[in-house]
Image 1 (tube, rainbow, N blue to C red):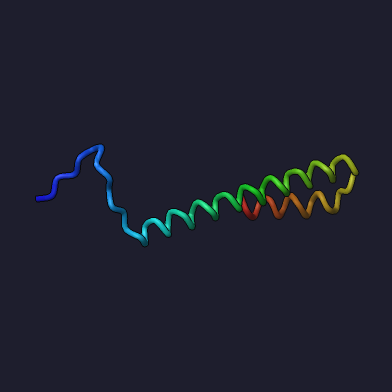
Image 2: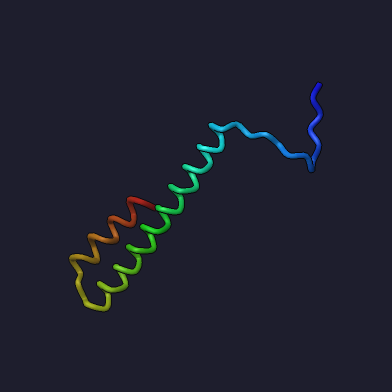
Length: 64
């Protein structure tokens, strides 16, 4: 029976590493898109552009 020590290096599966990296990147990109849309929404509020505001808020709802 293999014993795993707490502080010993663990070999991880290459597929698992790829999956974790992909999920991390997707999360980072999604957060970037959210922040970009939020800034654009702020800008439309300052400009009083109701049509673009509504479009952007719908887009934000879809990705949240």
